[in-house]
Length: 270
Image (cartoon, rainbow, N blue to C red; front, side, top):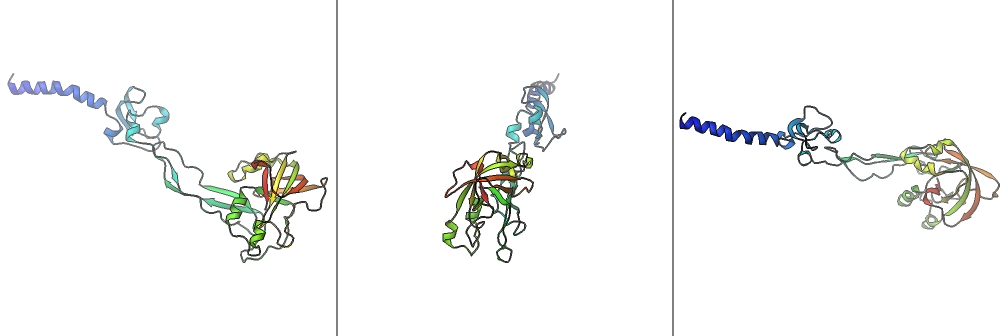
């Protein structure tokens, strides 16, 4: 055998183990693969995360099935969903009657490689506007008492109120305590995000309902359905804004300056 032939044989003998080792280390980086969802073609041959050698995958589903290539986390880092800030709440869909308002946020970055999924992008809430689109007072009372979560009061303070109210009137307000007598089953089974507060309405509980502008009548500075002038034995009706089937009865306990009920039992007239 010539020296050149011998050198070639030695080169093959020495190179073979390196090729085997190099192939054993093949993974997502080597294949330059990172695939969404479940993709059987997005595969390589090498060590898997579970320390088994063979076919391994570089798709998002491999984390669930446990057959990712050993370098999947480095080659395909998980990127979470990133969303923007909530928009301002919209006005009510209709004026002068109980309805819904809405706010949205938008996706800035879609999740990749099994990253954290996007949270809810739209929220709804019950509301009641007391002015028409032309700025006129609706001019009528609502019976029964319409209520919503006390969280809505934060939005009221931020938004501009009717020009009929002075700065002193904006500061005014009072709280009425009621003891719930009955409620429909539609309250306890409510599971929509904007209406989950209705689940906390319970028979026999004392709840606090705040009267604030602009729900307060501009003439008598009272809220409709607050039980003015009635004794504690009179049964009054209420209805949740956002779900007209969530309604019931209660009796007035007393009127106080400030509400002191737990947050889950604190509401506002709308």
